[in-house]
Image 1: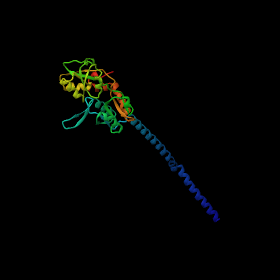
Image 2: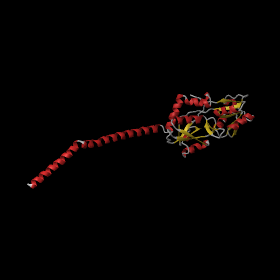
Image 3: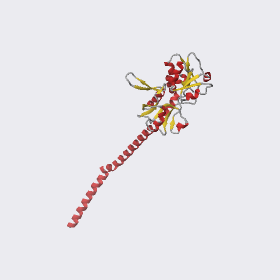
Image 4: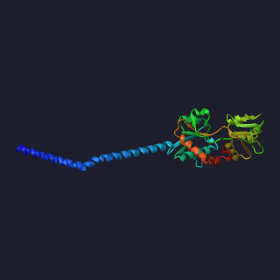
Length: 294
């Protein structure tokens, strides 16, 4: 009898315990079971949103490598009016010129900044290869030899040579210089042009300023120099005149090291500026309508 009573008591106790467990499962226990599922769904949603955000940011970064970046751009600051340094009264230096305005506009349109690095023209390619600069605006032509170690943007400018002479004379073209004394900067394409003139008496000297002095002094009948540079010389030297020659194969493009992360962004913006007329406005501001060619 005592055994039976103890057994019944134990059964009642077990039933009570089971009842309590069942009650928890159907009430608060059910909510506790569902909470992890809700949390997991929320985590998945957050993860998807995060991945989408990261993907969007990656795509934006890929399409605009200049955003928030300061790029180092090589130039030769003695190449007036394309690139030069203007000195303020307080000693501050500012890079100015057509190439300078062009590259600054391209970079700033894409949310970046420019640090110009001045160096001799002949050093620009090596500076790109050694990563001293990110790209170059030094008025470089995309020759086959240069394309072996660099990539080039769209051609954005065709320089034109000029004949400079005293205003009392008139030499409208190369043929008119037959038998004349013509100065040119030694070792340049201007020398090559001068040497095509029949019976020419060539005077090879160092630099375009020296060529202008040869004409002013009468030691040369004329000189052949860059047309844009000739415009600047005429502004500073009265009594001179010039004849602009036809376009040649010489041209300007922006040079990049191979596989540059900035190539697509810069080149695409350059093409847009060529199409919408912004490039023409920059050319006119520094040169003249004569230099805008179809």
